[in-house]
Length: 141
Picture 1 (cartoon, rainbow, N blue to C red):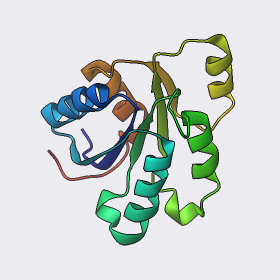
Picture 2: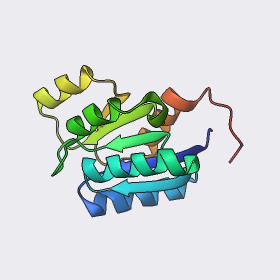
Picture 3: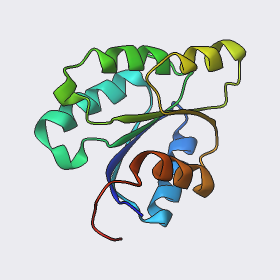
Picture 4: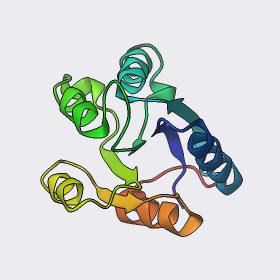
């Protein structure tokens, strides 16, 4: 199984971020885990990490839809307007409780690799890895 350099968890619920971080740590397939409570914090992390320390530039972003200040859709617009060199995370998965048909439809027209319901589980995470990172050559874990 490939080992990811960094995952960015973006969710306005600290408990959700905590539980998802705990799951990723338990799986042992991620070197660094960053968390943000909204899209503004997430953009600040991307701007800082993808300039200063590429070891903690996210390979994968797990993004909530409904958040204050900057929601998941607004974050995606801002993220994809960055220079390509700063868009380290080629895989963005929307992870949300919103199953509103409008949100699901909108996500299908965006450059995201998936639209999943919370909570993140081992099976969901392993499916993300298999679908998006399986061909990657990395160190064994």
